[in-house]
Structures are given as structure tokens and as C-alpha cells.
Image (cartoon, rainbow, N blue to C red; front, side, top):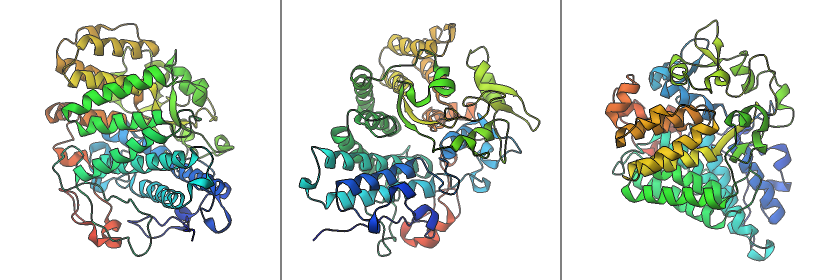
Length: 468
């Protein structure tokens, strides 16, 4: 008998929410069931909608949580109408402490629904290798969600820690909501298992709004940089070389063109977020929150302006002072421009990050500083930089590691949280020099939302330093 999977989404850790739980209108099937290849594809489309965090009421994607809060925590972005406590790494009083919780679990549960539903179908119902590809794409999304949670709500920096992720590897029903959080080691193992499957089985060629094996490799690179065992760096370098040499992606000649003219047509974009139809006409879209400021205003702080001083990117990323403090953050939209499909496009993975993580892995593994230096010059050159004196003057491992971190921030700020994670990979003493409000590693992660303990008392303890 065919197993039927009902794809309503009840986000654990909060009460069932009919808006989060509803499949998008163009991703419905009769009975919301997975019974064939075509319904599997439609259900997978629903997973991508959750990845893009589409708001059905406004028909807009919601990539704000990936672009803004991590930059706030790292000290480079801020709220223009008055600072949020998260900008001082005071997460207990921040409006962004639960920023990734509900959306990540919504994504994970949708992916689990596809995995269970598609697995139950006969291989004969699918053409060629499509069954394995669908499963691989869904497993990538589950890994992405779990790693996002690991990065923000678990002690990812301590492999011996019991404070890992609440892993959800089965579709949620009313009978299995109660579950204890896993250890950090178990959390990494789950994410890496899913990514290895995605690397082996995801399509090699796909539109860059869908998962490919190359996107899975790029995500595995991120995971291994956080995992931070000696052998991980060799693997990161190997993955980077595979992407650079074999994927077909190429660095954009002028980085600015990605954000101002090309968007998803750029051959550098490995995985991006496509805006919904007519999203640019919605007044309260994210572009309008950057400039000129609609209901909210998200700005560049002095730290970012200082970092970009004498860098050609400053001319198009940092705008004039706004009336409430900070500077207009113009990475996505220029002064005086109206929102467009280009300005509303978001980016999960670009090839520049692959190069930069390779450079970091080379330095951390004790490899050639000259090789890392060459990579930094390549990436900075594509952004229009011609003065490489700071790179040339970095002659020790620690100095080169700092230069890699600074370029990750300059290049990837406001995209998918990599400026924040790169900061936290530095030694604690250096983190505290750069960000004095991070007084200890408690402030590396956020508190688990209180409602989770109400809905799922079995989860266990709150993160150290916080109250339930």
C-alpha cells in the first residue's frame, strides 16, 4: 500500500501556524500527497518556497534573517530607527533572538515530508535518476536548516558539548514532537551525512535557484570550517578545487555587477533566491528597508564604513548618513533607485566564498601563505581593488588569517551570515578585540526560544548563560 505523506507543516517549538504550514498555491496537489514523480516535484517546490521563506500574504521572499541579523551581531549592520540590543550581543533582549528558529524547522519538516514520501515510492515511478536527485535536494535543505540552527543555537565550536541541535530527521506528527536535543558531535554527523548524499546524487546541472552537487560541496565547506578538525581543512581545499575546476561557475569580472545588474544571470551565483512575481512593487519589500527606509531601516555601521575605507566597494556599498544614525547600506540598491527584481534577489552561495574558504583552509592547515595571498588578490581584484599592500604585509599565519577574515566580511557582508561565522572562527582573544561586547563564548550563540520548552519539554536544558 502506498504511504501517503500529508505536507502540512506544523513547526515544532511553536504552536501550529496555518500560514507557515500551508503549501504555496502553486505547490499544491489533490490531498497534499506524494503519490508520483509529478507530485514529488511539486512537494519539492514547496521545500524551495520555505528555503526562500515566501510570505504568501505579500508574495515576497523573506531573506532578511540571512542578510541583516548576522551582520548586526558582527557589528557591521544595524537598525536605523534605534539600535536593537542584538547589536551589542545582548540576545536575551533582542528582537532577533529567534530569527532562524521557526523558519529553519519549517524548512526541515518540509524536507522530511518529501524524503519520507519519495522514499516510500517505487523507483519505477521515476524517470532516470530523478528519485535520487529529489531526495538529494531535500537532504541538502534539511542539512542547510540543521546547520543554520547549529550555528546560531548550539555550541558548534565544541565537539564534546552536549548542547547540539534538536535534530528532526522525521516528519513531525503529534506523536513525535517531544524530543531531546542531540550533542554537537551528533549534529555535525547528521548534517554531513545529508550533504554527502547530496554531493553524490544531486544534479550536476540545475538552475541556480535549485540545489546542485556544487551547492552541496559549498555547504559542506562551511560545515567543515566550523567543525575545525585538522583533516577538515584538507577536505575543504579539495572541495573548493573541485568546484572551481569542474562546476562551470566563474568569478564575476566586477563584483558590483552581481548586485546591481546581473543578479541570477551571473555565472558566479551557485545558489540564489529568486524574487516572487511583482515583488519589486510591494512597498515594504527588503530593498525599501535598505533605502530609503519604509517600515524599517537597516543600515551600515561605522565599523563597516571603516573597514571599506579606501576600498572601491565603499563607493557603492556605503551611502550617506541617514537622519537616525548609521549609513545607508547600498549593497543591493543604489541611492535614488526603486526596488527591482535585481535588488530583491538574495544569495546563499557565490563562488567568491568558495575561494575565500579555500584561502582560510590553506592558512589554518599551515599551507602556503603565498597561495592564500594569491587567492585574496584574485577575489579583491574582481572587486576593483588595486592596492594589495595589506595582503603583501601579512607575513605570519595569524596576520594572513586576519586578512582572510576581513575580505570575507568585505565581500560577503549582508548575504548569508558568513561575516558572523568567520569572526567567531578567530581566537576568542581576537574576537574580543574586534567585538568587545562579546565578553565570552556564551555570546557566540542565541538562546533557544522559550516557547520551545513549552511545546517540547523533552528538549533538555537551555543554552548556558540564558534562562528558559
